[in-house]
Length: 209
Image (tube, rainbow, N blue to C red; front, side):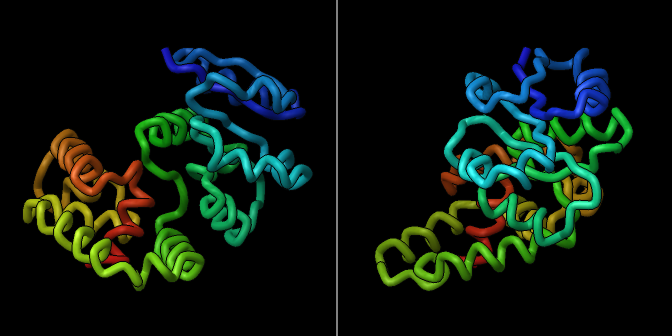
């Protein structure tokens, strides 16, 4: 069973989130940064992020997947969290079923954020790394283009829909395939392109397609 930390000082939220996740994961609650080790995911209170800038640095440096949960967090804050390596953002008062779905999704390598924000996140990441968008190393660019050509036609369809922020269910319906098949295609795509998750896949496609 995967270990998930719930990081907050708010006892009401700790109780709510624990209740939503306890039957599916090995849950523990904490307000101590030092205890965020050896976990698969962290559900982190947005107030913690707002009050401690060091937490954002942990998003990319930790092997855990961070899901920020908050109330009324602006789209710019949500985007900033993803840019710094968070796996997503979820409203703190969402139904338990939705919070469980969010944690399950990020643990599978997905991102959890409003679909219309995905292109904005990708655009900002490209601007932050212009060398990747327009590689000066021709060999690297040629290799990247070549890797894209190793994708099957259906894998390219899936990858292109990922760029639009579509989830597996929508992709499956659009391509008339099962969600399990979509997952299988994504696993293959990640391996072929050597990318860890959907966001990096979308960035790769935007850069080299």
